[in-house]
Amino acid sequence: MTRTVYVNGEYLPETDAKISIFDRGFLMADAVYEVTSVLDGKLIDFEGHAVRLKRSLDALDMAEPCTKDELLDIHRKLVELNEINEGLIYLQVTRGSDGDRDFVFPSEDTAPTIVLFTQNKPGLADSPAARKGAKIISIDDIRWGRRDIKTVQLLYPSMGKMMAKKAGADDAWMIEDGYVTEGTSNNAYFVKNGTIVTRPLSNDILHGITRKAVLRMAEEAQMKIEERLFTIDEAKEADEAFTTSASAFVMPVVEIDGVALGDGTPGPIACRLREIYLEESRAAAV
Image (spheres, helix red, strand yellow):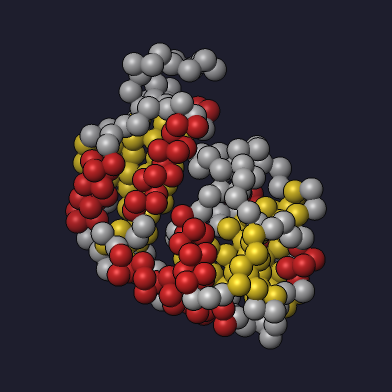
């Protein structure tokens, strides 16, 4: 089945989708993106992703390509056209193209480019990886300083994934000035003596939509939370650890730099938070 994608107001077969070779997203990574999960044919936390998209666009002085209601309609239409029950919708907005390459931004009347496509992921919620738990390594964080803006500048995170793969692990946590920032595509947490520890929000990490939801749910479940800087050595001595992201929800971590956490299996707090998140998110999906 050929996917139907959305490009600048049109629903097209993916084989017919085109953008200009002078698009600034292609030439300069001058673009932002969001990824929204689909469970049971409905969108998970769409409102949070829409709000963060606007925040990213505003931070880069980039025009909004459409209204939030129009964006919701596009998401729902793509779910319908591609018959997605469990999967992901990827959205990218670029500053567009004025017909040539230049470091200077194009004129204000240049229309942004907007692209959306689906990924069909049967079994997304019932993930074998989550039952097994992830192994991670630590790497230096050498990204630019505005990680709170969800840009498409993903080369180093991609390299980090490959470093982990070559080391026989699943992912990497990045370290700056001695402290863990986040994973390559997720927010990072560890649990010690029943307390969940994660880095506080700042320009140094992505303001995760799943992070916000999971911390709220943990608080409502009367779990203890500390938002503070932490080292990789602290995490290695933890009882358990996990990550959060829109595409993997709550993912238990069972090993860091070759050191097993607890008994080397997914911890009870991570597993419980995954259950709560999936249950509540499904109930609130649109």
